Amino acid sequence: MFSVALDITATDGTARAGTATTHRGSYETPCFMPVGTRGAVKYLSARDYEEIGARIVLGNTYHLMLRPGADVVEQFGGLGSFSGWNGLTLTDSGGFQVFSLDPKVDDDGVSFKSTYDGSMHRFTPEIAVQTQEKIGADIQMVLDVCTSLPAEPRVVRLALERTHAWAIRARDAHTREDQSLFGIVQGGTDAAMRKESAQRTVEVGFDGYAIGGLSVGESRAEMVDAIAACIGEIPLDKPRYLMGVGDPASLVEAVGLGVDQFDCVLQTRLGRHGTALTSQGKLHTKNAQFINSDEPLDPSCRCWVCKSHSRGYLRHLTQTGEPTASRLVSIHNLAWTINFMSDMRAAIEKGTFQQFRSEVLSIWG
Image 1: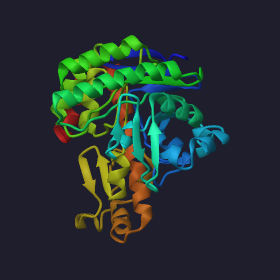
Image 2: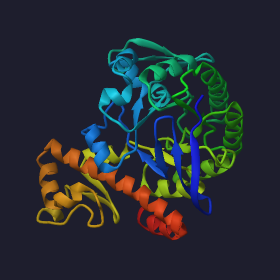
Image 3: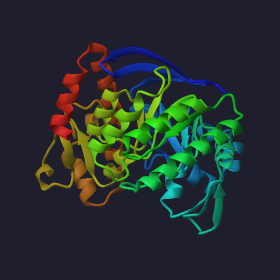
């Protein structure tokens, strides 16, 4: 199994900046990864990913195995070739999607219905690995058990135990040396179980480690405490990935604890409804106050949308239901977030991260 090499180039407290190198390329950390669930980020193309500075784009195993099918993606040479994207790719095992569909779970795996046609399907840790090897992303994730929060301790314990057992099976099933495999830490918001899960996952041994099962109903404070309880158990020379988290306050808090990479659908979900992320907080383009505004969404933003389009124009597109509005605001939100990660990296390198964190939380906290 090819191990991801993580070279830490700067630290500021527990916040860290570095470069992670996979079999096929590298990415700077802290890193935000846009989510292309079905092989595309909604309203965007591979060319857009490159222009906004993305380095890794996610695909979702659950959706891709159902349509067009892992065999089809494999025939095209893998997810990157299939989508025309020359950067790096990562596939979530689909566990989160599966467990949001009220599946039948047992110690061996999970049975679930297709969201497309209602047909029944089966996932085991081995099938998840084999499916992702066909899809061919640079990084694949193990199949885990994700529970919504709050949850009873016995439910969290069962999810932890199954996730650990499945992690061992996934590692043993993994055969592609050109594809990295990340383990996933569970444990809900229970500090002791989080720490235990991290320790046991590290004992199994993976190329990188994800913190899963958060941003599923708990408060930000509870999420931060859960991260803090387990992150110290993850080796310093391995990437630390917080799954499904992307709001600016949570990003800066997690980076401050030592998290390296993130993904989230928030940026494009907000964009589709005309809400922009800016250095002064959320901006709702539908607001009447912007009808005559020639200002960009964010005067300090470096993206091409802000260089080319005014708030007044984007309000017009949003008000008239023009799909271009969703595309432009989504591009801005992703570019803004990627630049936000770059600014965090610069603050870590300068030793000014705590000042940066305070400023972000004063706006987004």
